[in-house]
Structure formats: C-alpha cells, structure tokens
Length: 217
Image: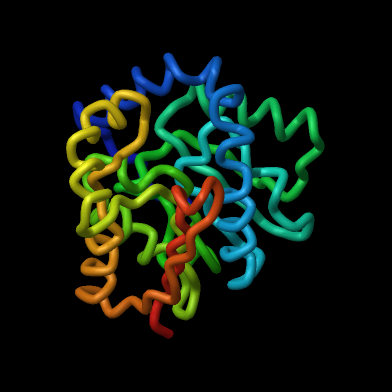
C-alpha cells in the first residue's frame, strides 16, 4: 500500500516544530472541547465502510471512537504527537488501529482507492496547501467513498465574518483559522466533481462543523 516517502518543504518543518511544543499539553487543552465534533466525524466516515484513514491523527484523541471492526490508519507530520497516539493504542488495546505513520497529508504514501473514507479533524485550515491535501484524500478514497472534515469554518459574510477577519491573526497563534471559509472547500469539490453531502454544525454552539463529501463512483 505504501509508496516512497516524499520530502516535506520548509513550511511543514515549521509545523512539526509547533506540534512538538503542543504535544505534551494537546490532550488537556482539546480533548473535551473537540470530542463531540470528533465523534460526529468518525460516525460520518464509518458510514462508508470499515477502511478509514485519519489524516492529521495527532495524539489519537479520536482513535477510540471508531467501531471495533474497523481498519484504521492514521498519519501526522509530528512524531511527537504520534508517540502519544501509539501509547494510547497500546494502553487501550485499540486493535482496529492498524498503523500510525509520519506523513505529509499533501503527499500521502498510499495507493489509489486504498480507503472507504478519509476523515480530517481540525486540520484542513492549517495545512500549507488545503487543495493539495483534499486532492490526495480524493485519490486514496475508493469510488463512492467519503471525505469528512471536522473544523471551524468562518462565516462567508455579515458582521460575524468581519469580526472573524479581525481576530484571524490571534486565532492562528492558538491553532485555529477563523478566516477560512467552507466555500473554499465547496469550490474545490465543484472543480473535481465531488458531491458535497452536507455541512452540519456541532458543539460548541455550532462553532465546529462537519463537512461531508462523496467521491463519484
């Protein structure tokens, strides 16, 4: 299933350094805040089948949410994050997790149509090239399979949108993006013939959303 690894550029190197700093406290900060959205994303991905890739798996906060009969692989840029994810897998006996590897989501080392679904949680607004990552997700998903994104997406217009644009630099410092719109993902989907199944708000108060897409097939 794996191909030759690709070399990450300078921007991904900076991201690795940032996540190395975050890794020791990530679970404490994000576990309860992101759990409802993560569970919803996993549930949406599992509808498509048992073979699932979690892109940007981080410390593995969502790995325990997958059905026991699943075949789950996870990738992340940060070895520091993955070290903690592997410890969770061992400690909790998560036999459905079949592999956790360092990998750039813009250059996935998997063959075409390897998975029933790809799920990316709180990732797509942070990668250097979101469209490249989405195209890789599309490549490794089988025809008829799903791409599920859990994220905060900024409002397209109105007073909330203007406030989000103002606070965007601050949000970036703490790992969120407030000025990234779901319309950017939807535009990519139209260009690539991908069906947008739905955009559903979730906890807290609709701040996070689940964006579901389906590969033609």
